[in-house]
Amino acid sequence: MVHKFSSIVSNVLMLIFFLSYRVFCVIGDAESAEGSVWEAMNFASHYKLDNLCAIFDINRLGQSDPTMLQHDFATYKKRTEAFG
Image 1 (cartoon, rainbow, N blue to C red):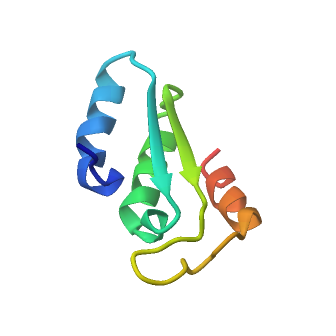
Image 2 (image 1 turned 180 degrees about the horizontal axis):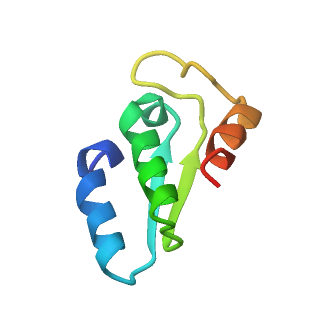
């Protein structure tokens, strides 16, 4: 079963916060247009959760149209680097 990152973000972040597991999250580029992804990145940065690894799948494919940023890797890089 696959869940959207935004639908389970609070549960995953609480697990990471209280446990020492390394967690890998694959985030689609269309999904990264949602605010909850960036809220989670902010939470992880604020609490210095170094056991969370976010992997962005930048394939330009949205639900029915191309994503807003398409293959603009530089913008994704700037956004993620802003969290430290």
